[in-house]
Amino acid sequence: MSVAEEKKRLFIGIRVPDTLRDELSKVKDKATFTAAVRWVETNNLHLTLKFLGDCKPSFVEPLSQKLQSIINKHHSFYLETTVIGSFPSPKRARILWLGLRGGGRLISMQNDIDEGLSEFGYEREEREYHPHITLARFKRPAKIDLDKLNNSLIFNERFKVGSVVLFESRLSKGGAEYSILKLFSLNP
Ligand code: 2AM
Image (cartoon, rainbow, N blue to C red; front, side, top):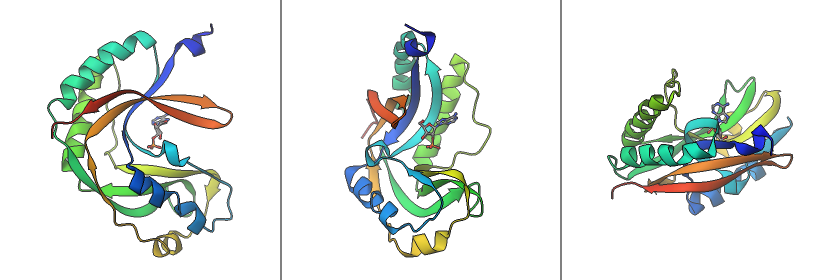
């Protein structure tokens, strides 16, 4: 077995509820981009809290214990969708995302996860955390009309976040496949 096969590519995130997934699956039908774009598969839509990258399988247990102790201190909360935006800019878009708001509890939990995992040697995020769901990635920087896209869609979804997930990401030629390794329930 090669070294690469031994490792697990991990990240911590939040699942997108089915109702919002269904809505988001319609975005690609409304988008009229001419640029080459790779849409995130509907099943893969998620909100990232912390990307961990390649980890030894033996790390999953201590990581899970730490996450459990952090999540035990937090309560479920609601998030609301905002608008579709792009990173770094609509003139040279690489990533298309859906913004989320209402997350005082989300920010505090993400901050605790970020701080808690620094114990294991993970760098703390230097940039401010902007909650978003990545919808698509452009193959090359693209100029896109976000107003047109946002005007053609009415998103006003509010959803409850009751758990946090430790995901494993498997990369293949067909794209990434995410599976749930552990699920941590927030306090009601
Ligand atoms: P994002 O798309 O939500 O911003 C799973 O791969 C998730 O981890 C991705 O959706 C991405 O978050 C984040 N991610 C992937 N590779 C990353 C990297 N090298 N550094 C930071 N975050 C990464």
